[in-house]
Amino acid sequence: MAAVPTSPLFHLYVGTFTVAALACFASLTRLHQITDSDTRRGLWALLLTSGSWATAQVGFLVSPTPALKLGWYTLGLVVGLAAVGAWLYFCSAYTGRTYHHNPTYRRLAVGVYVVLVAVKITNPLHHEYFTTTAVTTPFPHLSVATGPLHWTAMAFSYALAFVGYFMLLELFTQIDYDTRPLFALVGITGLPVVLDIIGYTTSYLIDITYEPLGVAVFAVGVAFAYIDQFDAVQLAGERDEPIIALDADNHIRDTNHAARTVFPTLNGAEGAQLEQALPHVAACLNSDDPILPVQQSDFTRYYRVTETPYGTVKSGLGQTIVLTDVTERERYREELERQNERLDQFASLVSHDLRNPLNVATGQFELLCEELSVAEENEHAVAVERAFDRMDDLIGQVLTLAREGRPVEQWDAVLLSSVATESWGMVETATADLRVADDVEFKADTARLQRLFENLFRNALDHGGPDVTVTVGVLPDREGFYVADDGPGIPLEDRDSVFEPGYTTREGGTGFGLAIVAEIVAAHGWTVQVTKSDTGGARFEIFGIETVA
Image 1 (cartoon, helix red, strand yellow):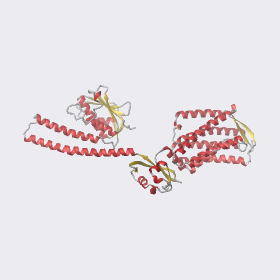
Image 2 (cartoon, rainbow, N blue to C red; image 1 turned 90 degrees about the horizontal axis):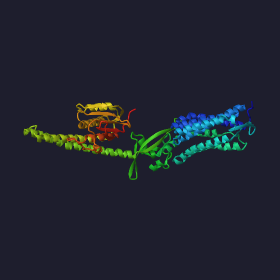
Image 3 (cartoon, helix red, strand yellow; image 1 turned 135 degrees about the vertical axis):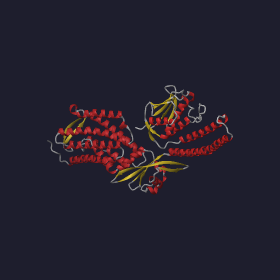
Image 4 (cartoon, rainbow, N blue to C red; image 1 turned 90 degrees about the vertical axis):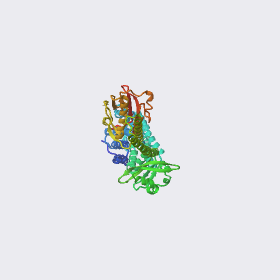
């Protein structure tokens, strides 16, 4: 059994790697504060493998026998290679890439890892990876002479590590955020390469791998000093929207270029209270309406203001304010409101200015018929009365058409079979038959969906006769449903016109039934098309629905 070296340098080595291992393991307890789960998982794996790597180096240094030293050294090779994979996973996740989720890359990584581990642990058989010799400088230890397989694996590992550095440096240089602390920490992880070179080329340091030391500094820096910036930088890298970072006391800590472009007063505003620098943003955060209008030159842009906490309870929870541009949506909403106002005005006009005179005319006509003792079978009187009824029906249909086009605001979970059956009961179906082929639950405005079915059922009865069979079912190839009948069908050349208001091929028809169907479909954000049913009749397909799991 070899004696433990007493050299101060030996104790410095052991102490340094021990501290590195403890730093990595201690940092694991802080990672729950990182918001992104993939980043947290990758950093956890990196710190665990690096801490184990440093522990293996300590075991290699202090073990009393060559066999134990070789065991610890081989363990360090295995977990050190795993640390490279963890580093790549972390870099991909932190920079918003998806390489770590790619099945091909994952399978390839596992395959390469297994092959390289097999080469390393079978070194006693081929001795192509490393050989060992007992030396006394700079203190008694087991010197490792690396072979060609080692340099091949080392070159491959450093190439992969460089890919991770590239991803991080690209993020740090492209975002408009103070990344200098993290930039420095990432740079420190690469400094041990210098120690590797000195240990390989001189006798001042021993020839082992020093990478766990750099990772330990990175771990302590991220977990204990710069974890707030760590989260904020990732958020800034994922988004192009204006971002304002606040500290725990609501002081402006940092902003990106997009935020300073939208709010020029943010230039030089670091340290100022948000309420003083941007009172309208602060007021928006404290209100129930998250939409913030911002006047820019000759037009107004709208932003949805959201805030995300970062930091720790001990150090204080700061806020990251993100402003998402929703101008197009707000303009669309305002246009819908204006359309609804015009529809209300139109409905009022039709309801009062047209229906009231019609009611007066109808009443006067009835009185006139009574005074003149006009018989009910008088063809002229019957024609006038029928015209009055048709006008009243048209006014009602126009009002319905105007109201059904409004966007749906109240969504309910509905069952296709239930709504179809209830709607069938509201229509005079004579001897017609309804069949529900299959069922689906989806979201809709129940009342309007019932009117949609009622109009489709009436259309089938009007054109297919009292004995028509109507089938309701679920579309097999997309999210939707259909209503089909075995009537005469709709000619191909007429299918683009049937949804136009006033279009009808039936004498006495208003031409509004299918137009109302189209308006109800559009109000839900769905799509409707007409085709031929299996029996040669009409088949209306409505798709784009949102099913309920």
